[in-house]
Image 1 (tube, rainbow, N blue to C red):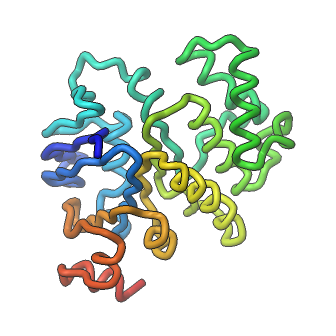
Image 2 (tube, rainbow, N blue to C red; image 1 turned 30 degrees about the vertical axis):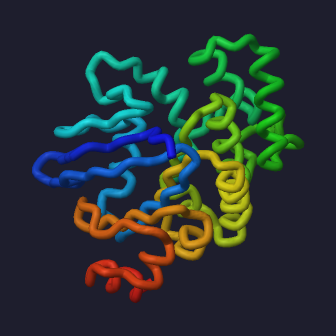
Length: 242
């Protein structure tokens, strides 16, 4: 399969805290990888490094064989190809739904307002939010906000989607509607990296699982390998407590 992302020996510290230690793995086009692990294991930091929201201390990250951690790289260009959906939505609360989806397209991709609007409506339809296009964001439920955030990311036509615990800020009944949208993207072979605490979802939707512990990859494999036959005692302890 075509490699789309390659992470080579990256490390990241905040002050004296080593959050990521010598992490290496690659992602193939169309692959869905779930990143699991305890709080503080480095999951969110890893995904933020791939989106260039954090600067790595060592190592390199490649997107389609281009080193995106090079200091001369165009960050906006990279982020238009690697979409990101955050735990707390990161929507513009002072704008309505459709303007949240139009603005990034206009600013980064220089699309006309009419073209951006048509694309926004098509993706809002895809995530079941078209009827809320002209609602103010602050009037929406958490699950609705997260579906808008997914639509907004898709409007940029990304080649990879990153999800940073997309359901952890949601009420249980809203988790299902967001996971349904992500599952549909997986079925369409969207390349995705998903940081999640939803173990059943990770088991059912992923091609591979990365288990992080203490800022390192403790174990990596298929869902069957990780959930049914974990090799590492730390993995066993983590999954058993779940």
